[in-house]
Length: 294
Image (cartoon, rainbow, N blue to C red; front, side):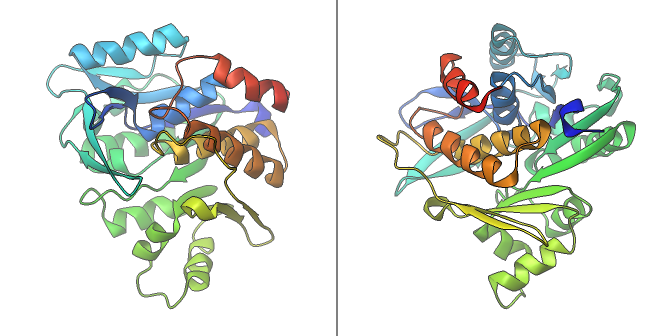
């Protein structure tokens, strides 16, 4: 079955990023990726959990306004909607992530029935508590899927054993160089770390390096791209999520790897020119979808 016959299935956190200037922006890597894929017209299904509170209501309203599928959004009457305090040092974001929020308690019994094949995207943050970790395992076993794992190591919310388990058998893994070093601290070089990771995954690694760009690595290919010069960098929050969303779109639409990488880098370079991780204006996406022919 062709990748184009698969639908994106996104699992994990949705939250509000709170910025130093007092503004709040809807975010969370899985939400950001789902939002971008929706902007590209690829109809993602987001499995997440929000609080039965005012921020949760804003999330649901924002998704409905955008026309996104809300059937996988659970509502929690006990725990609040997720929140992150964002700060910046030398232009790089740092995150204070609130614990025990709604997305930590995604309920496996409330995941909607899934037919057909899916490209499953998930990260590592939403798996910090047992309930959501169990929900992901149930999701993986309930449908036929290929799996994209987006590693985001946010201290203190990760454990090496869990991350290594997530990597096993993944079709694609995206992480940055610092995260690769944290997962394999005993390796003598980056090349050795890459080699060890390649032995765990079934497909490609996407290794990001900030201003140095990104490299897609498999046992047969190695393709690198560098960021485009942005006219004005507002903030870098969500740049990696933007990159992931286009890379996932490329797998679904059958783009050659080099095309996926260059388009992903181009889109990420545009996202750093806006506040927050996702644009509210759909015209932002139309510029890219016209150029990409989707």
